Image (cartoon, rainbow, N blue to C red; front, side, top):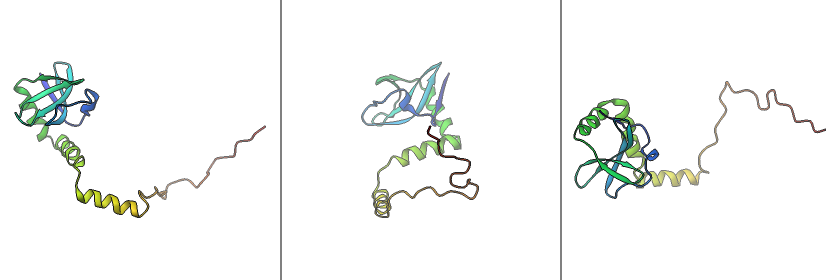
Length: 125
């Protein structure tokens, strides 16, 4: 039985992927897990483990389609794909944020304890 998880990181199974491919998630084929990758030129789905590419059976297409219908997995997949896209708008926002001093400091909420609450200086002796 083949199952697909689009939320788990495929980088656990390989750091090198074929050129011209899309990394989708993780595939489990009867206990053998690996990165799920689609080759753009052919549309073929393959499993990648430590740079080794293995073809997948046709039922994997069905498992990928089912996984993409699950709203939580689909949202995670789209966020990962869109988040990794470079755009001029992202670059401009980053430059503007850097000009203002970078990422703002975290502010303490109203439920935070007072500064140094319950802390005493260490005694040397």
